Image (tube, rainbow, N blue to C red; front, side, top):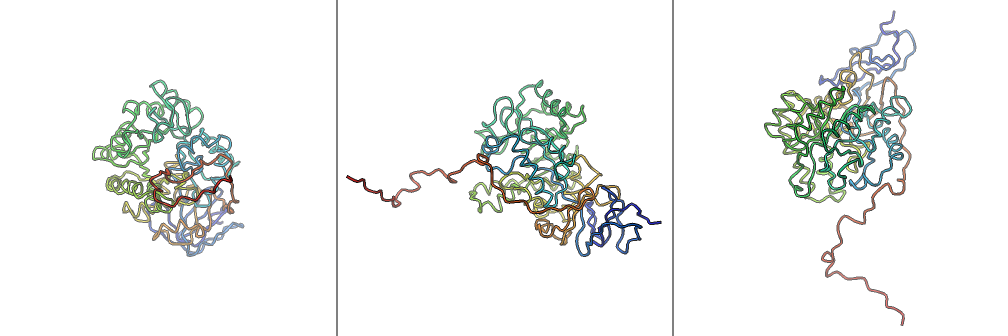
Length: 456
């Protein structure tokens, strides 16, 4: 009798990168329905007893699909908060998000977390994907981010109460409890809190903590009582420290930690999603989009001044997860989902194998599927890639779409044609006349265009 009588797919002869940090080895992946049933050593497979689909991966890397732990699928690549909050309509945003998830698949992303979204359409998109109505990666979803009236990173664009864009303002303990319970009622996988924000008098000094510890603890206690984890946007030492101590299940950014904050995240072993892709893109490529040297230097500084503490946290066992902040004009869908691995290797000193583990098996936590996906081992969901290149030596090959030969999700080898050319709907983008204010002093001394004389 065949050893694998029910196999439906075999990926044969590839260099298997299991996503668990182990070096690659030649092997075969045997899939039954949506699960991996065996990862064999290199060599000939036993006769399977019936026809199966075979993929020849000889000389290629076979690895788990990428998971993006910080992706804003509903934002559709805005240039500004003004565009994001005032140029997006709910129904159209949902339809466009359903199209954009295909770009993630084509880039090798088989799972992602959208922790806060416009109009809470993430929950509906997730359910449409799970129902097979919309083709897309596995998805976990939050609702609106919880904000204080300080406004998070959007400042005065956020009202003193109510909702706008991706956020809901809460102003009292009762409102906090009510909003957390409301979001859990509609089916969120995560509750997100914007723990830090920008204020006009603090600009240039970074974000400040805008929640008290007691408020953070109330969010956690309310969500945990209903079986739902909490994730926090934290830039700055005190916010990271208080979020960890309050029991947050995951922290986004965690930049500018001090020793006290580091001690708190190590004690609690809170996974951190640094999300340096946005900063790295602006620092490295900002000149091409007209960013000033000052803003490029500011974003570079956030990486360089935070790297050492993140390295220390990782050395102490704190999981570092890969997230890209895809969804903004600096991080468009389908282009940069590999980039955080590159930054982890370059800035945090990880090996390529460690970076791959951060983007796959460790990142399954963000999907609330830890141990279920993100690894090539028997029993895991069959979410995997076949890559023409040696990812164990160079993670940047994942950024070359032509090298992604197969994307397999739930045991199905996907057909992913290039998307059709797109025209943005009227009013979808904010109109910009230029990058600067046209002051008279900027053109003083230049030759003014001659005016046409009036007829007499």
